[in-house]
Image 1 (spheres, rainbow, N blue to C red):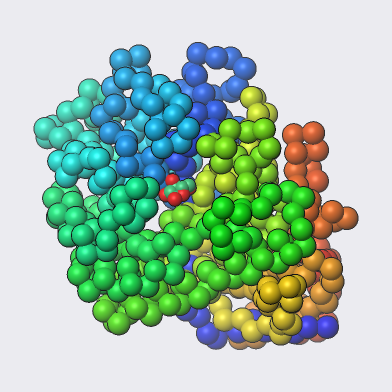
Image 2: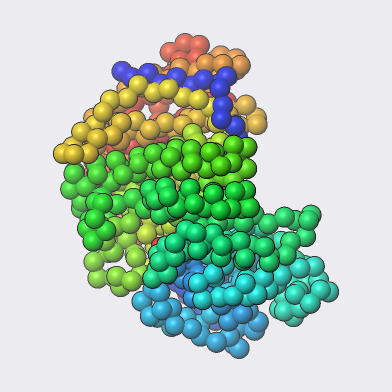
Length: 498
Ligand code: AHR
């Protein structure tokens, strides 16, 4: 039996809703076939081309934020190609992801309409690689200038007089990658030039996201802070979880070895080191903590599904992915004083997707259910937790066997999320609730996500879509402030106390 203590007296503050953000790139079937289909076809229900099944599923998650159009695709994207009457838009070749032709029928307006349907904030990544300062400035104007001003003309002609008020703007993407090989000092100067020319109404200030480090490139973070100080609101970090450090070895998404399972989870836990080390450097230059981290690309990256186009990054999603998501979201909650945004890559049909589509069919992945079970952490007050853990060892991999976070919502309810990372042993847990000021007995309910007999290897397929789904988890009250639950091997629980 292991003890987990939830301390209602200590908190790092509010869990920014944007920690539960997502990312949608023009890559493979994320946009075309995923979010958007030809409005003229009748097989797939849609509204102005936007898939209604996808919108409905995502609305269940209360997603706060969606990043678009890339990623690396943003480096080649020119927003004017994707506005105005659809039939008049020029098609483009997606040179970054597989050389496929795109109609450009999904552009800024469609993205902003999608965000409206999802009731989430749009986050647009500007093109600082092949685009100009003027182009980005005019994109911001297109979205945000009040009607009647010159920058808003094109938007008004497109039938949307009211400004969209897009707040989140990424100033480029991965300047260190994708053949750009920019160094941090060069990018910092470039950032400053782009950022300074963006016009914003003082009533609606922009939130500018500067490109931060790849993984553990702490020099990048140091140089950015040295050069720019607080001349940005957020500094990004990109880190993908893979079973091997060597990029050429990504391992399969299903049917992986036990060693690959443990390597993957150990690498997911590495996110904590990254958050702590990057934030420490940021605080040295910005003690007030004005600039916060935006982990605007995270998630698993395995080998593409056999038979799929390798450039489309389509991969299945197992309970292992769900555990990676649980570890990350618990970490983000527990570091909500320094991390202000995080975006899982990528919402539909790409990498660690929430949703997979096949023609008119839609599949909810185990990762989707983690976001469903965790959604009430959004905007709640993070609570300190202590968990007794054991070290799991498999080959060279070492990691704690339990991942935990807790929060208290405005209505006083508590959400405790726990993941048992051990793929062979269940865990009996005793939960001690302290300092919550609640009267006992309380109303307690809990959900469990597990792969049952297939454990970490379980996944939902179009033939068997309900292999992994949340179930009710029995919780035993042991007396005032004390609960008992048992987590099966490789499982995730969300315990709610009212
Ligand atoms: O998410 C896939 C790609 O990974 C993105 O386009 C890029 O930013 C990152 O390298």
